[in-house]
Each structure stands twice: as C-alpha cells, then as structure tokens.
Image 1 (cartoon, rainbow, N blue to C red):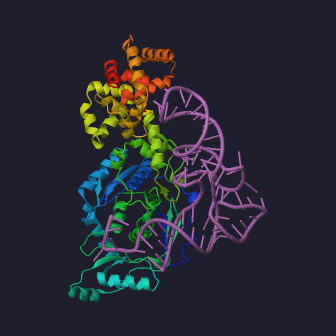
Image 2 (image 1 turned 135 degrees about the vertical axis):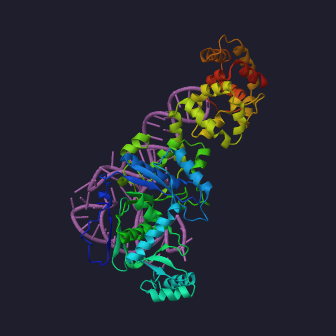
Image 3 (image 1 turned 30 degrees about the vertical axis):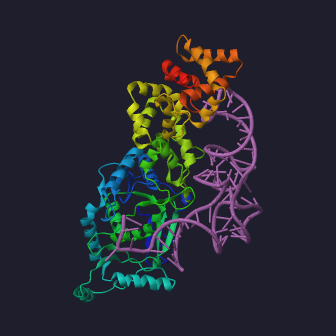
Amino acid sequence: MRGHVIMVERADQGRNAHPRFHRKERHVPASDPIVTRFAPSPTGFLHIGGARTALFNWLLARRHGGRMLLRIEDTDRVRSTPEAIEAIIDGLKWLGLNWDGDVIYQFARAPRHRAVAEEMLARGTAYKCYATPEELEAMREAAKAAGKPMRYDGRWRDKGPADHAKAEAEGRKFVIRLKAPQGGQTIVNDLVQGTVTWENENLDDLVLLRSDGNPTYMHAVVVDDHDMGVTHIIRGDDHLTNAARQSQIYEAMGWKVPFMAHIPLIHGPDGAKLSKRHGALGVEAYRAMGYLPEALRNYLVRLGWAHGDQEIFSTDEMTAVFDLKNVGRSAARFDYTKLESINGHYMRRTDDAALLAAARDILPLIEDGDGILKALTPEKEAQWLAAMPGLKERAKTLVELIDGSRFLFAQRPLVMDEKAIEILAKDGKATLSRLVARLEAVPTWDAASIEEAVRAEAEASGMKLGALAQPLRAALTGRSTSPGIFEVLVVLGREECLGRLRDQT
RNA sequence: GCGCCCUUCGUCUAUCGGUUAGGACGACAGCCUUUCACGUUGUAAAGGCGGGUUCGAUUCCCGCAGGGCGCGCCA
C-alpha cells in the first residue's frame, strides 16, 4: 500500500493499471504510523530552507502521532565537518524541532550500503562499470553536442566476466551502477507535485558504489530510508529528479517506495536563489538578529503552506491542521518585513520575564551587548523587567528591544542623539528647570503623582503636555522616542531622574 | 543542450468553473496619543501572453514567454 512509484518496462504496460493522482486528491494515508526524517548534509549551517524542510517533517510526524528521525548525510568525508553537525543540531534545538531517537550518521552505515549494492549485483539489477572519468567526460560532451541528454551510455551494462577480467588486468577500478530500465517511464506520485513522469530513456545508470567502495548519496539515501522505516520523505524540490532515480533503486531491490513530498524552494528577497553567497544565513543568524523561534516557525510555515486566511498559528494549532495537500508548488521569496511583523506580534504576547530572558540570552551576540550584560545587576534586571511592557510594544526584534532599553543602562551624563539635542536646544533648559522644581516636590514617586506634577506645570505655563514630555524624554533617555514618559520616570527612579534632568539644565 | 517543476496585488497567500477575486505584510490616509509604537478605520494594489473546452474561466487542456531545479565516482 505504500508503493506509490510505478515503473513500467513498456510504455503500454500499467499506464492505466495504476491510478495516478492529482494534487487535489492528495492525501496522507495514515494507516501505518508515520515516520519522517530530516536528512541534512553537514557541509554548512542549517539554512532557512533546511529549517522549513525540518519544520514540515516535524509537523507531519506530530500531526499523525508519528516520529521524525534525524540523519546526518556525511558520506562526503571531505566536506563534512563536526562544526556543521553541531550547527545543525543547535539550530534544530533552538527552533524547537526535536527529533526522535538517536542521530543517525550515514557514513557509519557504509558497510550496509555496500552489502546492498553487492546484493543488487548478484540479482543482476546492477553491474560493474570500468569506464574512466575521461571516458565519462567525453560521453557527456558528445551527448551535449548531439542534443541528447547528458547521460552515461551504458557501455558496461552487458559486459561479461571476460571483459571484467581484462579491465582488472589493465588496473582499472570499477564502480557499481544500477541497471536501470531503458524503456518505459518512471512515475512518481508526489504528495505536493502530483504525478510526475520521466521517460526512462532520459535517465541513465547511476553509480551506486564508488570505486573506493563507498556509497553514493543516491544509493545511501534509499538504503537508509528503507532501513529506517521512513514512510514519508519531505524535502526540497531540488530533489525531484532524484526521486525518479531513487525510485528505480527501490524497485530494483523490491522495496516499497515511501511517499514523497517535494516542497518548493525559498528564494531570496530579490527572487534569486538563496545561496551561501547570496543572503543564505544559518538559523543562528536569525537568533542573533533577535527573532523568536516560535515567530520564525510561524513565518516559515506560511511560506508555501496556508490554512485559509489564518496567519498566526500556535505550535498546537499548526500541528493540528498542517497538511501536505495545502502545500503550494511555487517558490516563495523570503520577506524580512513580514518576519519582523510576526516577530513583533509574538514579542508583544510573550511574558515579560520570558522576554527578558530571551533578550539577555542574545546579549553576547550583539554590539555592546557585553557592556549591558556586565551592568545587569539584580537591581537593573528588576528595572528592566518593570520597563518591559512599554519596551516590548515598541520592538519588532529582541535587538530592537535591547536597543530601546539602553537608556536604562546609560551612565550620567547621558550621550544625547541628534534629535534629543535639537529638542533641548530650543527652550528646553528653562522648561526642564521648572519641571525639576515640580518633580522635586512630588510626594511619592509613582506614575500618578508624577503625571499630576507635570500636568500642573503644563497648566501653569500654558504648554501642551507634549511640549513638556519631549524635553523630559530627551534628558532622561538621550533620545526622541521611548516608552511612555511617566513609565520612564517611574522605572528610572527619583534620584536618577533628577540627576539626568539637572545634567541638561 | 536534455529533462522536470513553477507563474493571483510589491511580498506571502485564499479560491477546489459562476466571488464586488478574500486575507496578511508593506505602502498611503484618518483616528487614538506625551514621542515612537500598539490598536483601529479606510484607500490604492493581482490572475504573464495566445489559443481552445464551456452558457461561463484565475480555476480544465494546448502552445508560447519568463523563472526555478536537475543532468558528478557532491549531497
């Protein structure tokens, strides 16, 4: 019931015998427990596209009470690094995408991959190929020149032991290639892309085992997904062609083909492909930019997937309604503005203490963060917490939140920014002097009493409240914007406020 | 070159043949207001092009154009 890829040797066979489905009929059969997997190659950080792929895998598994496995595809011994593995694992953890069971390292399974290749050799569904790299290159050139697909021509496909012995005698190395069907079609019924068909003549005999005895990615993936009991493969649609070739390997081994879902890629803001050179960042970069993991998850889930008009999804909500059939097929652009908007939304709804903790966590990652960290005494922390309601309303990222909090940690005399200087330059000093006199007389330092004093001054001088609030704000924070001025006065405390105000008179 | 995929406001998307083509972000304008935000109200803003099928196409089919991905003893 799981085999959804159909291979036919002759085009006239089976074409109608097996039902193809259209994407509007797609569904996720949930008879068996679902097993998904996220299978990054550790050649770099966990980028945003990988994060979304992991998220979709995670959501599908959770939705159906299944499991998501994590497999590190480290068969490329040259490019795989322990740093990358760590970055990927840290990234997943930060995003809250937990996997089930132990991390599986693909390279450790190389003996099993070899065994399967040997088995295929014995079955006659694979063969030894002694072609040299030069021959292969020449083949591709010739095919290109002739306007044909650039593919291996199968010259070793039907060679016998005598030919093999001769090649061995010449000191040639062999690879094991799949004996792929030469006629007919390979059909993939993809849960996102619908039915996709390839003429087998356009697909060549791919290499299963390299001449050094190590498996290729194409082979290792199939063996591992099979052995791990993966029922649903969700990955980027850059793997769509691979799906056809991998299907042939499943068929050759007589294994059921898992369901597949090839999700569209994420492009950069300018529509260009997201590459390491071009705007692709690791998730740790998003953390450093001050995004909340739940906000990033929410943003990511809406890239290529929708549930009616709903924009905000709690984790429970998204796991309850996530469905592959609502995944679109076109690439999406990454939009920082919308991410910020969603992040701001989540920040406003985050508990003050939790938000403070999140902000404190990224202090080491941002400019001047260490300074704040050092200044963060228990008293300061209490102050920061008290200011949080006014602060979080005005920030779209934790970085902005921290920036907006700087006045709390500033030392007297404050450094004024340009707009603050401008505000104080007018008749600010005189105004401040009068306010200082009023504030000194405030009986108890609370918002109501302070506001009363300031309003009294406004009335006495015939000035609007704003005309008083701005000089106060400038003197107290060094800026032209801040949380409500009475909140600022209360949080800063009487002595500090009067000191800062006198500094500017 | 060969193959595959994609194409609705600037962006993310809804629409499962009949809608004033909806929502969100952004933009613009108003309200709120001690600044900035938040909130709130409103406005502008979309079916790539050409053929079919149909009483009727954004929706189904074909072609074209544009974009993307793949074509390794990389993953």
